Length: 145
Image (cartoon, rainbow, N blue to C red):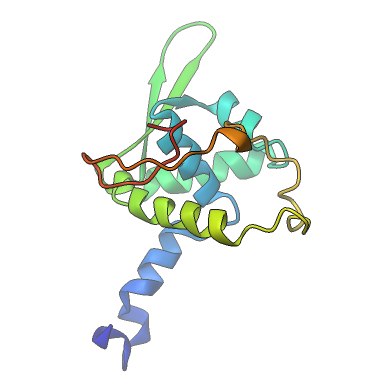
């Protein structure tokens, strides 16, 4: 953190924010991490409020920053799959932490902020049981392991 005192432009936090900023990027990364390999339509299914243009733009930015890999298959109908790169997988501990934080502080009596009410969770809230995965030292819910 000492690098951020005088030259804020060169501060690593600004690089991190420039790569992962955006309303939907963390949610997109969450679903790619959960599924391991996911198609565009499945991401859109999980995030119905997101516009196609926005989803495409955010995926292109994540690909450009080498956070995700886009694999295009030249078949009919066209098929595209997304996976996390090594750099993208390094964000999984932050996703773990964000999940745990949300689990701890989420108040079911309060409405979600605008734009997040219609998100379709890939898991049922009742089945969330944190488990320790010794290989990755993560605490994904049992439905993810």
